[in-house]
Amino acid sequence: MKRYLKLILIFILFLSLGCKTTSKITTVNPDSSTDKYKVYEQAVLWQQNAAEYKALCFQAYNTAKLNLENYKGKQFLRPLAVITDIDETVLDNSPYNARMILSGKGYTRESWLSWGKELKARPIPGALDFFKEAFKMGITIFYVSNRFDAQKPETIANLKKVGFPGVDENHVLLRTNTSSKEARRKQIEEKYQVIMLFGDNLTDFSEEFEKQPTAKRNALVEKMKTQFGKKYIVLPNPIYGDWETKGIFEGSYKWTTKQKDSIRKAKLRLN
Ligand SMILES: [Mg+2]
Image (cartoon, rainbow, N blue to C red; front, side, top):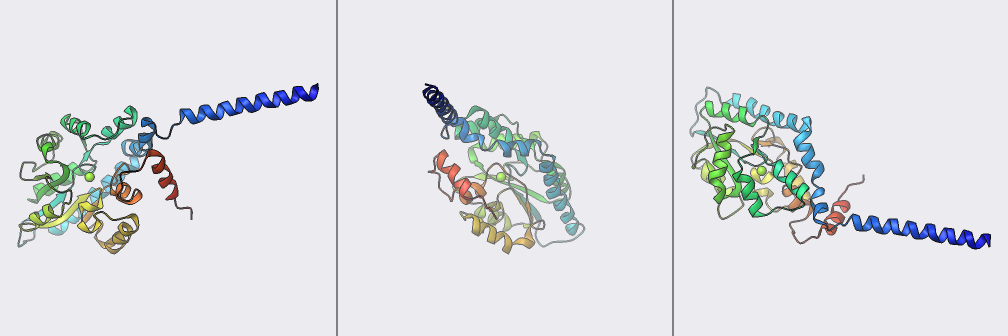
């Protein structure tokens, strides 16, 4: 009789454990919309809270300021210019990503346009100081971004609202037919000597980085290593960029949340 009782108890324990496991699986659904964006939480928290993020931005813009010294009091054949990206280089859109995490709703053209119209993007630390100084020196600033061309009025308004200099129709060049910035860079280089480029994505500097996988992107950075901090000034962006879409996910947008999770795990380096 005692043996039966023991067996029944073990059976009940087994059942209750089984139930617990099942309930765990149902509460953490890898394809649920909230979980899909939760993966960005740490990155958004870092950008919005880490003093180290701020310090890195200051480091980038302080380096750029030092470079300006090389151009003071000298004559050049063509007028000097700098080219800067906008999002995550001079304007901080992390609240848009924070909203995505909390609402469980992903990127849509509509929500992105509506965020832009709010004019709430704050300046990236150090950016205002640098561009004001460059502008005072007579250097022309081109804001070259892949925001939709339809966003031009609110982009100009947001940049002006927070105090960026030299912002107008002719100096804010957004995406019309292609996401490649090469044609826009070439157009500027016809008339100007471009002394520095600013960006959070390597395609903000050179077309060589376009549509490249992780290994190639890293090899190219090795090849161009002397340019960083000199001609190319890089800002940190842990939330999004080609490092993820073209690198981690190899240019494909077909992955499910579950597959993305497996890809991320498979790409963790263990030694
Ligand atoms: Mg950017």
